[in-house]
Image (cartoon, rainbow, N blue to C red; front, side, top):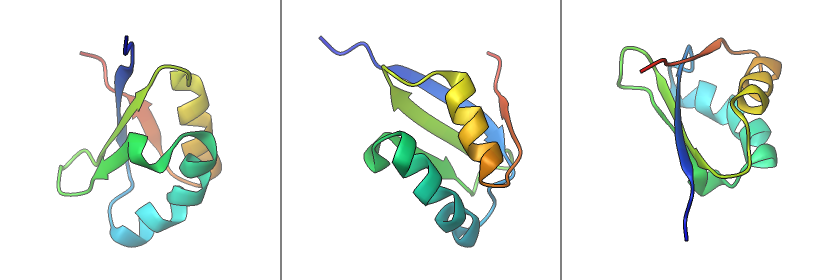
Length: 74
């Protein structure tokens, strides 16, 4: 049974260079096929599918990489 959570965050990761900068940090935390950034969206949405990583861990990782991030409240 798959209980993955789909988390979304608003970021300032706005280009392929920014994605490349954050990639090693996120890949260390979670599998590279479990996250993506929609740089064409005005809110630069980071989407993460996980069943083990908390929102706080993702936020801390992206902030350590030098980017702004906030949880999207639905």
